[in-house]
Length: 449
Image: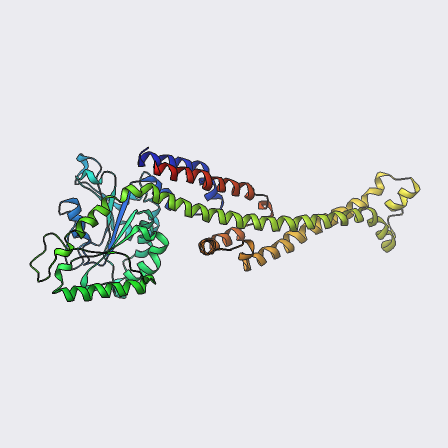
């Protein structure tokens, strides 16, 4: 079974079994839906002089993107192959975000300014028939330059979630010193793409004046990456240069294979598509499962409260049924004969039922008002103040998931009412557990075959 068929089957299985639960628990499904919809994708990011466009032109084999050492393109450009007839065709962002067949409909939220800087270019390169490369505007440093009219990092985050490979490029002159690069590595990419999907590249090394100059730039980049990632073990950094580089004093022979290895890494990214989707599904379904567990725990506490209230109300209603008439007679002189007196005399009639029924009604109304206006809101506020009481967070993984879903759980609790405490959360937990243990495991096995 090929990757396309596996992806289609996975999409159908998720739609059938999980889509309703994502909706029920107010969990965002758009990122997962987007990944299931379309082609494998490679995202290129970096500062404006890092060589992104040069690399794309080399991959495509034609000058499709403008290059230069100053900003030459301020758009997010998707480059792919559709049909030979569509080569050279350019599709504007307004069409991309309104096409349900593409994974970009959720990007409408970034606004018109972003949409006007978003486009797709079709090229005559069959190697891109089953994948797409996304070029991005160069990252900036100065705050005055940072106002693009849309949230750049939010766009990068969304595209990184879609991507099977994120190529982060640097140049020797700005080796990891750009402010937006810091934000991307420190905050955005860790939440959007796994470490195995990120490739680091320092290009344009032919512009270094000497080997010592290159070593200094490379060391600076390694130091900056260690500060940004918080890791001492720096991942492999590809050192590359354009094939048509000018004369240089630097001996480039040790790095002649790096460009070829990088190109191979980019073009083999689609082979990991289904695996990456399964990773995303596994992560998001575990978030869904934890949310479901939290709501099941809350529902159980609310049911216990309701059951205790019902037991108290039942006892009070029985007492009210038999003693309301007697108490009223002692306090107010009526009725002439209470239900208890009538039962002892053996002369019970329907008239004797008026005060008992009134007493029962009063107890029921009072108990319901107490439960809905006082007890339940008090329980809800108490739990919202300490939501962690709903779960046992006994591992770092569960604590990490909790940080991601805590806000969503609070929103669900904010909208909770007594009518939702029998919402079938335990049954939903079983469905989610079954999907993780059976369906996901089955697809992992299919990948290996």
